[in-house]
Picture 1 (cartoon, one colour):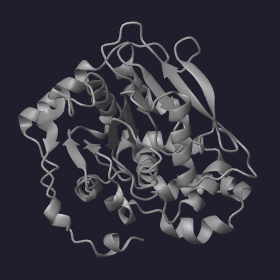
Picture 2: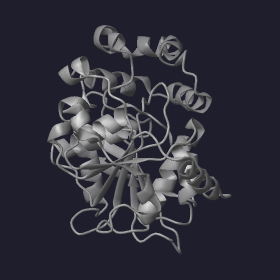
Picture 3: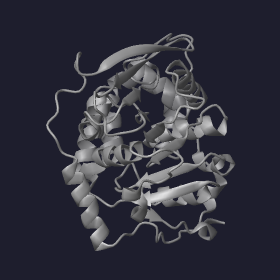
Amino acid sequence: MSSFKKNKKVHPFPELSITPEQEEKVRSMIEESRQEVPPYWEKGVTESFYVPVDDGEIRVFHWKPENPVSIRPVVFIPGWGVVPRNYDDYFEVMYNKVECFYIETREKGSSRIDRKKARLDLHQKAKDIADALHYLGLEGEKDFVLMAPCWGAAILMQGMYNKIISAPTIVAVDPMHTLWFPKWILSYVGPWLPSFLAGMLKPIFGKILLGDMEEPVQKKRATELLDQAVVWKWHHSAVQVRNYELYDIIHEIKNEVIVVNGTTDKIHDQNDYPRLARLLPNSKFIYMKTGEENRERLMGVVGLEFSKVTAEDGIPPSLQEFERELQRAADE
Protein backbone atom coordinates (compact mmCIF):
# COMPACT_ATOMS: atom_id res chain seq x y z
CA MET A 1 0.00 0.00 0.00
CA SER A 2 1.14 3.52 -0.72
CA SER A 3 3.09 5.23 2.04
CA PHE A 4 0.90 8.24 1.37
CA LYS A 5 -2.19 6.26 2.22
CA LYS A 6 -0.57 4.86 5.36
CA ASN A 7 0.61 8.18 6.66
CA LYS A 8 -1.96 10.58 5.27
CA LYS A 9 -3.42 13.18 7.59
CA VAL A 10 -7.16 13.62 7.60
CA HIS A 11 -8.03 17.03 6.23
CA PRO A 12 -11.40 18.68 5.80
CA PHE A 13 -12.52 18.95 2.20
CA PRO A 14 -14.06 22.35 1.52
CA GLU A 15 -14.18 21.28 -2.13
CA LEU A 16 -17.10 19.01 -1.20
CA SER A 17 -19.60 21.79 -0.61
CA ILE A 18 -21.94 23.84 -2.76
CA THR A 19 -24.69 26.33 -1.98
CA PRO A 20 -28.38 25.40 -1.71
CA GLU A 21 -28.95 27.32 -4.94
CA GLN A 22 -26.32 25.22 -6.69
CA GLU A 23 -27.85 22.03 -5.31
CA GLU A 24 -31.16 23.12 -6.80
CA LYS A 25 -29.49 23.73 -10.17
CA VAL A 26 -28.02 20.22 -10.11
CA ARG A 27 -31.46 18.83 -9.30
CA SER A 28 -32.96 20.74 -12.23
CA MET A 29 -30.27 19.54 -14.63
CA ILE A 30 -30.88 15.97 -13.50
CA GLU A 31 -34.65 16.25 -13.96
CA GLU A 32 -34.38 17.96 -17.34
CA SER A 33 -32.18 15.11 -18.59
CA ARG A 34 -35.01 12.58 -18.39
CA GLN A 35 -36.54 11.42 -21.68
CA GLU A 36 -38.19 8.41 -23.23
CA VAL A 37 -35.66 6.32 -25.13
CA PRO A 38 -35.67 2.94 -26.89
CA PRO A 39 -33.72 -0.02 -25.47
CA TYR A 40 -30.27 1.31 -26.12
CA TRP A 41 -28.40 -1.94 -26.53
CA GLU A 42 -30.64 -3.59 -29.13
CA LYS A 43 -29.56 -4.02 -32.72
CA GLY A 44 -30.71 -1.16 -34.89
CA VAL A 45 -30.51 1.33 -32.02
CA THR A 46 -26.80 1.12 -31.29
CA GLU A 47 -24.03 -0.20 -33.52
CA SER A 48 -21.63 -2.68 -31.93
CA PHE A 49 -18.41 -4.16 -33.26
CA TYR A 50 -15.12 -5.61 -32.07
CA VAL A 51 -11.70 -3.95 -32.02
CA PRO A 52 -8.48 -6.01 -32.20
CA VAL A 53 -6.23 -5.88 -29.13
CA ASP A 54 -3.37 -8.05 -27.89
CA ASP A 55 -4.45 -11.70 -27.72
CA GLY A 56 -8.04 -10.99 -28.65
CA GLU A 57 -10.80 -8.41 -29.20
CA ILE A 58 -12.87 -6.00 -27.11
CA ARG A 59 -16.34 -4.72 -27.88
CA VAL A 60 -17.26 -1.15 -28.77
CA PHE A 61 -20.74 0.39 -28.96
CA HIS A 62 -21.22 3.44 -31.18
CA TRP A 63 -24.14 5.66 -31.95
CA LYS A 64 -24.33 8.88 -33.93
CA PRO A 65 -27.52 10.94 -33.88
CA GLU A 66 -28.74 12.56 -37.08
CA ASN A 67 -29.01 16.01 -35.51
CA PRO A 68 -26.74 16.14 -32.45
CA VAL A 69 -26.67 19.10 -30.11
CA SER A 70 -23.00 18.38 -29.47
CA ILE A 71 -20.00 19.56 -31.45
CA ARG A 72 -17.67 16.68 -30.55
CA PRO A 73 -18.02 13.02 -29.55
CA VAL A 74 -17.69 11.47 -26.12
CA VAL A 75 -15.69 8.28 -25.57
CA PHE A 76 -16.79 6.45 -22.42
CA ILE A 77 -14.78 3.78 -20.59
CA PRO A 78 -17.01 2.03 -18.01
CA GLY A 79 -15.94 0.77 -14.61
CA TRP A 80 -14.92 -2.69 -13.45
CA GLY A 81 -16.96 -5.55 -14.89
CA VAL A 82 -20.17 -3.62 -15.54
CA VAL A 83 -22.62 -4.53 -18.28
CA PRO A 84 -24.05 -1.87 -20.60
CA ARG A 85 -27.48 -1.70 -18.99
CA ASN A 86 -25.82 -0.51 -15.76
CA TYR A 87 -25.42 2.76 -17.66
CA ASP A 88 -28.95 3.10 -19.01
CA ASP A 89 -29.36 6.41 -17.15
CA TYR A 90 -26.15 7.75 -18.72
CA PHE A 91 -27.28 6.88 -22.23
CA GLU A 92 -30.78 8.18 -21.67
CA VAL A 93 -29.21 11.61 -21.18
CA MET A 94 -27.09 11.25 -24.32
CA TYR A 95 -29.71 9.75 -26.63
CA ASN A 96 -30.20 11.67 -29.91
CA LYS A 97 -27.90 14.42 -28.65
CA VAL A 98 -24.29 13.22 -28.70
CA GLU A 99 -22.14 10.90 -30.77
CA CYS A 100 -20.77 8.37 -28.30
CA PHE A 101 -18.32 5.49 -28.22
CA TYR A 102 -18.54 3.01 -25.32
CA ILE A 103 -15.40 0.84 -25.04
CA GLU A 104 -15.64 -2.29 -22.89
CA THR A 105 -12.44 -3.42 -21.18
CA ARG A 106 -11.14 -6.97 -21.28
CA GLU A 107 -12.45 -8.22 -17.93
CA LYS A 108 -15.99 -7.76 -19.30
CA GLY A 109 -17.96 -10.81 -20.37
CA SER A 110 -18.08 -9.50 -23.94
CA SER A 111 -14.32 -9.63 -24.56
CA ARG A 112 -12.88 -12.34 -26.78
CA ILE A 113 -9.46 -13.02 -25.32
CA ASP A 114 -7.16 -16.02 -25.15
CA ARG A 115 -7.59 -17.44 -21.65
CA LYS A 116 -4.09 -18.94 -21.62
CA LYS A 117 -2.21 -15.95 -23.03
CA ALA A 118 -4.16 -12.83 -22.16
CA ARG A 119 -2.86 -10.39 -19.56
CA LEU A 120 -5.47 -8.64 -17.43
CA ASP A 121 -3.33 -6.09 -15.60
CA LEU A 122 -3.86 -2.36 -15.72
CA HIS A 123 -1.00 -1.75 -18.16
CA GLN A 124 -2.62 -4.07 -20.70
CA LYS A 125 -6.07 -2.55 -20.25
CA ALA A 126 -4.60 0.92 -20.78
CA LYS A 127 -2.89 -0.31 -23.95
CA ASP A 128 -6.22 -1.76 -25.14
CA ILE A 129 -7.84 1.67 -24.77
CA ALA A 130 -4.95 3.32 -26.63
CA ASP A 131 -5.26 0.72 -29.41
CA ALA A 132 -9.03 1.23 -29.59
CA LEU A 133 -8.69 5.02 -29.85
CA HIS A 134 -6.21 4.52 -32.70
CA TYR A 135 -8.55 2.05 -34.42
CA LEU A 136 -11.43 4.53 -34.14
CA GLY A 137 -9.36 7.40 -35.51
CA LEU A 138 -9.62 9.34 -32.27
CA GLU A 139 -6.16 10.82 -32.09
CA GLY A 140 -4.07 13.56 -33.64
CA GLU A 141 -6.10 16.72 -34.22
CA LYS A 142 -9.46 15.11 -33.48
CA ASP A 143 -11.36 16.88 -30.69
CA PHE A 144 -13.26 14.59 -28.36
CA VAL A 145 -14.05 14.00 -24.69
CA LEU A 146 -12.49 10.94 -23.05
CA MET A 147 -14.57 10.13 -19.98
CA ALA A 148 -14.40 7.31 -17.46
CA PRO A 149 -15.76 6.54 -13.98
CA CYS A 150 -14.33 4.44 -11.17
CA TRP A 151 -11.99 1.67 -12.40
CA GLY A 152 -12.27 2.98 -15.96
CA ALA A 153 -10.74 6.22 -14.69
CA ALA A 154 -7.94 4.22 -13.02
CA ILE A 155 -7.19 2.68 -16.42
CA LEU A 156 -7.00 6.15 -17.98
CA MET A 157 -4.68 7.30 -15.19
CA GLN A 158 -2.38 4.34 -15.81
CA GLY A 159 -2.41 5.06 -19.53
CA MET A 160 -1.51 8.69 -18.94
CA TYR A 161 1.25 7.66 -16.55
CA ASN A 162 2.57 5.27 -19.23
CA LYS A 163 2.25 8.11 -21.79
CA ILE A 164 0.14 6.02 -24.15
CA ILE A 165 -3.25 7.68 -23.57
CA SER A 166 -4.07 11.32 -24.19
CA ALA A 167 -7.10 13.28 -25.30
CA PRO A 168 -8.10 16.94 -25.73
CA THR A 169 -10.42 16.68 -22.71
CA ILE A 170 -10.14 13.98 -20.04
CA VAL A 171 -12.89 13.66 -17.43
CA ALA A 172 -12.41 11.23 -14.52
CA VAL A 173 -15.56 10.60 -12.48
CA ASP A 174 -14.95 9.13 -9.01
CA PRO A 175 -11.56 7.65 -9.97
CA MET A 176 -10.77 4.44 -8.09
CA HIS A 177 -7.34 4.60 -6.44
CA THR A 178 -7.15 0.86 -5.67
CA LEU A 179 -9.36 -2.14 -6.33
CA TRP A 180 -12.29 -2.08 -3.91
CA PHE A 181 -12.14 -5.78 -3.00
CA PRO A 182 -10.81 -6.58 0.51
CA LYS A 183 -7.01 -6.75 0.44
CA TRP A 184 -6.92 -9.99 2.45
CA ILE A 185 -8.89 -11.71 -0.30
CA LEU A 186 -6.74 -10.24 -3.05
CA SER A 187 -3.41 -10.97 -1.35
CA TYR A 188 -3.92 -14.22 0.54
CA VAL A 189 -6.87 -15.99 -1.05
CA GLY A 190 -7.04 -14.90 -4.69
CA PRO A 191 -3.58 -16.00 -5.88
CA TRP A 192 -4.12 -19.58 -4.60
CA LEU A 193 -7.79 -20.01 -5.41
CA PRO A 194 -8.69 -21.88 -8.64
CA SER A 195 -11.18 -19.98 -10.80
CA PHE A 196 -13.75 -22.80 -10.67
CA LEU A 197 -13.73 -22.66 -6.86
CA ALA A 198 -13.95 -18.86 -6.92
CA GLY A 199 -17.11 -19.28 -8.98
CA MET A 200 -18.61 -21.62 -6.39
CA LEU A 201 -17.77 -19.14 -3.63
CA LYS A 202 -19.15 -16.12 -5.50
CA PRO A 203 -22.27 -15.75 -3.27
CA ILE A 204 -20.06 -15.70 -0.17
CA PHE A 205 -17.71 -13.11 -1.67
CA GLY A 206 -20.75 -11.04 -2.61
CA LYS A 207 -21.91 -10.91 1.00
CA ILE A 208 -18.41 -9.96 2.17
CA LEU A 209 -18.16 -7.16 -0.40
CA LEU A 210 -21.67 -5.74 -0.25
CA GLY A 211 -23.37 -7.06 2.88
CA ASP A 212 -23.20 -3.76 4.78
CA MET A 213 -23.58 -1.42 1.82
CA GLU A 214 -26.39 1.01 2.69
CA GLU A 215 -27.00 2.80 -0.63
CA PRO A 216 -29.89 0.84 -2.25
CA VAL A 217 -29.45 1.76 -5.91
CA GLN A 218 -25.70 1.29 -6.02
CA LYS A 219 -26.01 -1.93 -3.99
CA LYS A 220 -28.52 -3.31 -6.49
CA ARG A 221 -26.24 -2.43 -9.40
CA ALA A 222 -23.16 -3.89 -7.68
CA THR A 223 -25.07 -7.10 -6.91
CA GLU A 224 -26.11 -7.42 -10.56
CA LEU A 225 -22.51 -6.79 -11.56
CA LEU A 226 -21.29 -9.67 -9.36
CA ASP A 227 -24.05 -11.99 -10.57
CA GLN A 228 -23.02 -11.45 -14.20
CA ALA A 229 -19.27 -11.71 -13.68
CA VAL A 230 -17.24 -14.07 -15.85
CA VAL A 231 -15.36 -15.58 -12.94
CA TRP A 232 -12.05 -16.47 -14.56
CA LYS A 233 -11.69 -12.98 -16.06
CA TRP A 234 -12.50 -11.28 -12.77
CA HIS A 235 -10.29 -13.65 -10.82
CA HIS A 236 -7.23 -13.26 -13.03
CA SER A 237 -7.75 -9.53 -13.35
CA ALA A 238 -8.17 -8.95 -9.61
CA VAL A 239 -5.07 -10.94 -8.76
CA GLN A 240 -3.00 -9.11 -11.36
CA VAL A 241 -3.99 -5.65 -10.05
CA ARG A 242 -4.08 -6.48 -6.33
CA ASN A 243 -1.11 -4.22 -5.54
CA TYR A 244 -2.19 -1.28 -7.68
CA GLU A 245 -2.31 2.08 -5.89
CA LEU A 246 -3.01 5.27 -7.83
CA TYR A 247 -1.60 7.42 -5.02
CA ASP A 248 1.85 5.98 -5.84
CA ILE A 249 1.92 7.44 -9.37
CA ILE A 250 -0.58 10.26 -9.50
CA HIS A 251 1.94 13.05 -8.98
CA GLU A 252 3.71 12.01 -12.20
CA ILE A 253 0.66 12.35 -14.46
CA LYS A 254 1.12 15.56 -16.42
CA ASN A 255 -2.05 15.59 -18.54
CA GLU A 256 -4.85 17.96 -17.66
CA VAL A 257 -7.54 15.93 -15.90
CA ILE A 258 -10.96 17.15 -14.80
CA VAL A 259 -12.04 15.18 -11.73
CA VAL A 260 -15.79 15.06 -11.12
CA ASN A 261 -17.80 13.91 -8.11
CA GLY A 262 -21.34 14.27 -6.86
CA THR A 263 -22.16 11.18 -4.78
CA THR A 264 -20.66 8.83 -2.22
CA ASP A 265 -21.19 5.19 -1.25
CA LYS A 266 -19.30 2.24 0.25
CA ILE A 267 -17.34 1.61 -2.94
CA HIS A 268 -16.84 5.25 -3.93
CA ASP A 269 -15.54 7.25 -0.95
CA GLN A 270 -15.90 10.84 -2.10
CA ASN A 271 -13.14 12.10 0.21
CA ASP A 272 -10.68 10.47 -2.18
CA TYR A 273 -11.67 12.62 -5.16
CA PRO A 274 -10.62 16.10 -4.03
CA ARG A 275 -7.51 14.50 -2.51
CA LEU A 276 -6.61 12.88 -5.85
CA ALA A 277 -7.35 16.11 -7.69
CA ARG A 278 -5.07 18.00 -5.30
CA LEU A 279 -2.23 15.60 -6.06
CA LEU A 280 -2.61 15.71 -9.84
CA PRO A 281 -0.21 18.43 -11.06
CA ASN A 282 -2.62 19.72 -13.74
CA SER A 283 -6.19 19.18 -12.62
CA LYS A 284 -9.54 20.80 -12.00
CA PHE A 285 -12.28 19.57 -9.66
CA ILE A 286 -16.02 19.76 -10.24
CA TYR A 287 -18.46 18.92 -7.45
CA MET A 288 -22.19 18.51 -8.18
CA LYS A 289 -23.92 17.11 -5.11
CA THR A 290 -26.76 14.69 -5.75
CA GLY A 291 -28.21 11.42 -4.47
CA GLU A 292 -26.48 8.08 -5.10
CA GLU A 293 -29.41 7.01 -7.27
CA ASN A 294 -28.38 9.72 -9.76
CA ARG A 295 -24.70 8.75 -10.06
CA GLU A 296 -24.81 7.42 -13.65
CA ARG A 297 -27.27 10.09 -14.77
CA LEU A 298 -24.95 12.80 -13.46
CA MET A 299 -22.17 11.34 -15.61
CA GLY A 300 -24.46 11.79 -18.60
CA VAL A 301 -25.24 15.39 -17.69
CA VAL A 302 -21.54 16.21 -17.36
CA GLY A 303 -20.61 14.38 -20.57
CA LEU A 304 -23.38 16.14 -22.49
CA GLU A 305 -22.23 19.58 -21.35
CA PHE A 306 -18.59 18.89 -22.24
CA SER A 307 -19.67 17.67 -25.70
CA LYS A 308 -21.19 21.09 -26.42
CA VAL A 309 -17.88 22.96 -26.16
CA THR A 310 -14.41 22.51 -27.61
CA ALA A 311 -11.34 21.49 -25.66
CA GLU A 312 -10.03 25.01 -26.09
CA ASP A 313 -13.17 26.37 -24.39
CA GLY A 314 -12.34 24.44 -21.19
CA ILE A 315 -15.07 23.84 -18.63
CA PRO A 316 -18.53 24.47 -20.13
CA PRO A 317 -20.27 27.66 -18.93
CA SER A 318 -23.09 25.55 -17.46
CA LEU A 319 -20.62 23.77 -15.16
CA GLN A 320 -18.23 26.57 -14.27
CA GLU A 321 -19.98 27.47 -11.03
CA PHE A 322 -19.41 23.90 -9.80
CA GLU A 323 -15.63 24.05 -10.16
CA ARG A 324 -14.11 24.08 -6.68
CA GLU A 325 -10.82 25.71 -5.77
CA LEU A 326 -8.42 22.95 -4.82
CA GLN A 327 -6.72 23.24 -1.45
CA ARG A 328 -3.46 21.75 -2.72
CA ALA A 329 -1.36 22.87 0.26
CA ALA A 330 -3.42 20.59 2.54
CA ASP A 331 -1.83 17.47 1.05
CA GLU A 332 1.72 18.71 0.56
